[in-house]
Length: 154
Image 1 (cartoon, rainbow, N blue to C red):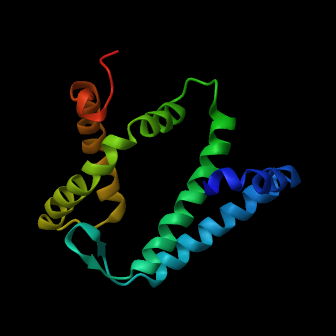
Image 2: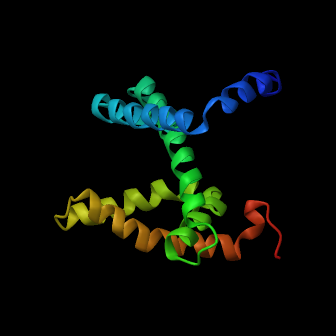
């Protein structure tokens, strides 16, 4: 209902200058992410009722979503029509985000514990190993458990 009521207001804003609005949203997203990351001291785990710095988590989540949408909008304009790895990866993540969301924490925790056990505590190494392990796991789930995602076999 709010979306239908805000259509005329949204059209007025969009008619102004889309690039200025995109820049403002991107600036809000980056500043909000930076604030949330610098001020967040406790982990928020909603599924176990641990609500550490919930307000900072919400600011970081919404500003991150806003920044990601603007970045994806311009990435699509730059990369569309080209057959390259970055475009295919962005499209794959977009199509399989329902698979990535539930399994990314399990993958991160398991790989993080393994890396810490062997004395590696670099965030970039965790990210790289998560990609190398997580993408094939998500691909197997998307291909062979398509029914769990509400997809057809086609």
